[in-house]
Amino acid sequence: MPVLVPVGLGSGLARRSQSGPERRVVRLEKPWFFVVDIVIEPIGGDGPGILPPGLEIEPEKRSKLTTYHFRILLHARFDLLTSGNWQTEEHKRWAELVFAGLREAMSD
Image (cartoon, rainbow, N blue to C red; front, side):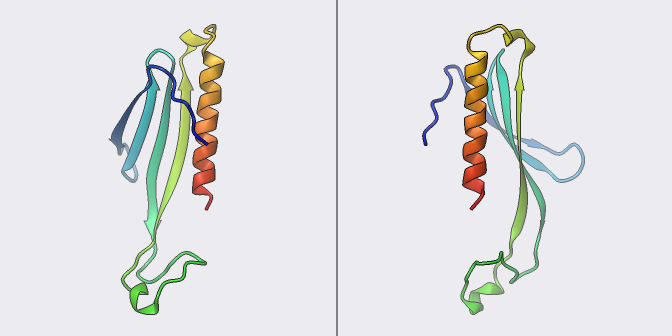
């Protein structure tokens, strides 16, 4: 289901590695209104040939494959200055739709 993008929305990619594994961040931001971060963080991998349950691969190819695991974190922050703005609730619903769509897409 397509989701309309709020007018004035900007996006960017960033790296974060304060402590622990290095993270990648997709940031969606409407200045003075909100910041939505989609954080992708590695949490390790399995040895060669170990694949997720249900994945069928030809035996001769299995030993060449490795499964990597990631944690996806979804954060939204709304600026306090927008508490009386008529668009605030609309932006919150938009963020909820984006998060719901991502959760559905990742649940396969």
